Length: 287
Image 1 (tube, rainbow, N blue to C red):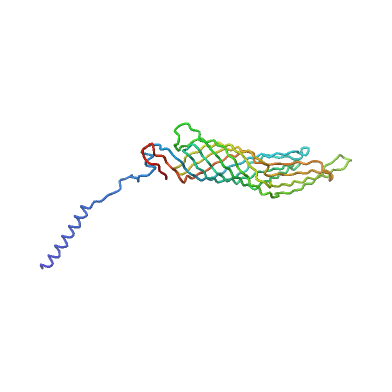
Image 2 (spheres, rainbow, N blue to C red):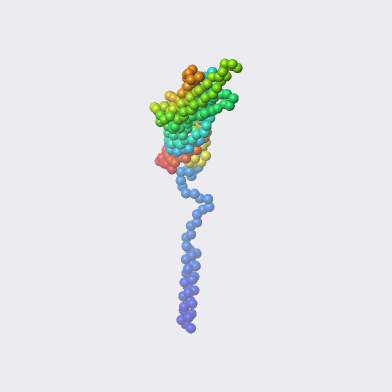
């Protein structure tokens, strides 16, 4: 019997020691609502901290209205108009101290020529160039309150761009019809040709812009913009020839250089933010 009591005593002793160990063990629990120390918690603790610089990429969607011109209307037979179409683009930019912005953009946006032929059944034909535009923009923030603080704000800017042109022929069309001279004078045979081609050389544009940039989140901005562009050189040209009874009577030309308005929205992802903590006595940092 004695060995049995000895075995039971040892089991009871070890069990009590295990409970004592659990009782005295130091257990640390995470306080409810605690967060690790990072840049955002520092901003909340000390208030607004100045931004040294930041980098972003963006996607633009907009509608474009570009104006084209025509040199003659063949006595009211033809005309043109300014089309409004949708377009898109991508951009990358750098912002310095929330006051200055440099942006490089590629816009997939066409320059158009529109031919209108009037009559009992009016006809409309729209021709376009290669749709490629490269634009470098500089912008300035309109400061009304604290500088170097990232907030929703108005920006104004100016830019210049290049329009690569392929020199390709786009569209060649022919039209024919008849016109009565009078009841006893017979009819005239009318003929018109339209030949559209893209410039063989690179053309350019200049731009003025205004936008309101909204800070949506730490890494997201939303921009509502309006841009006025002026074309520098003819990107797309349509040559028109008008003949009556096989005899050429008039020539005309429709030209498109990219002059017009853009209205749209841009969604931007901020992938780098450099903060200036010097007013707080800290070293500069980034996220």
